[in-house]
Length: 288
Ligand code: BT5
Image 1 (cartoon, rainbow, N blue to C red):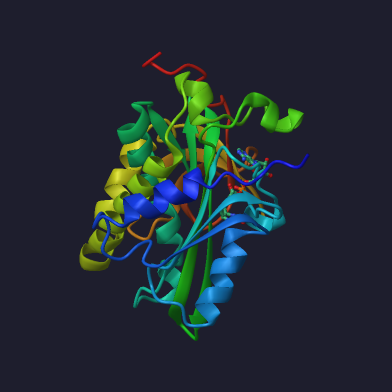
Image 2 (cartoon, rainbow, N blue to C red):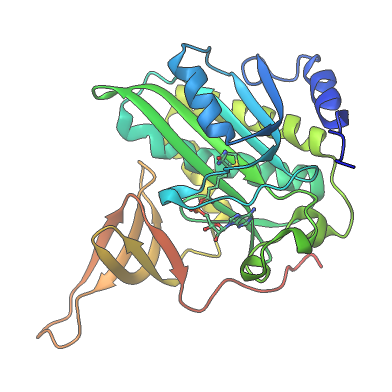
């Protein structure tokens, strides 16, 4: 017999959002038992002029999307798949800052809801004990140089058991449940995430990126000063991480190739790419 959909997640979400916990985000909220991708659904709603703050949440995704055409494993009943429509009056070049902002919101929520110690890997993977528990996919629609809408899509592995990850991900991915040893309330996590996201978004609109960037660097301390390689569309860059700049670009100091008469360090700004830490992230969490 097919499993009947479990409506307790939706009921708890609707009930908690009936309180004035947020002013903007989750108003309205669209909930689906199963959807292809919450980002695709939110983008469709945004094109139909849905209001800023509209949120799409699904219990399961059949076509969860990662960056660069990759996919996001999205089993039912255990995790959070959420997309928010934002309409900041900012240039299109500011959109990547929202990915960094969202990763800070996720990290703050993990601390508040689980007491685990999260870290952020540039640009926006959230890890616990070196394993990926959250991915963020930001997609934008622009009117010339101005943003029309940004879809911030967030997937958090909340109560996923190890067996729900394909074998090739089992040593790289994890869930908050697996790290903490007890289940996490999905609805409370989702509502807390929306409140943290809203607080940071308002701060970003009022004060710009530097405040958010400072919070981001606080969670990215495991990356600062590390030797990394970054895969960018043009090739691979190796160097040492200096931090991020006031626009959210990663600053990597690289030494010009060996064999050159006088190797000279230079700092490169990287706007998009995949980071690999040469010696890897730490494997143990100081809390446990
Ligand atoms: C991401 O891409 O990490 C962005 C993931 C965004 C997912 C959310 S869910 C709600 C919203 N709706 C969507 O359709 N998407 C967003 P990327 O950095 O490209 O990482 C993708 C890679 O992470 C995959 O190629 C796998 O190696 C790995 N991966 C896939 N599923 C995973 C999972 N559930 N947990 C951890 N790692 C995973």
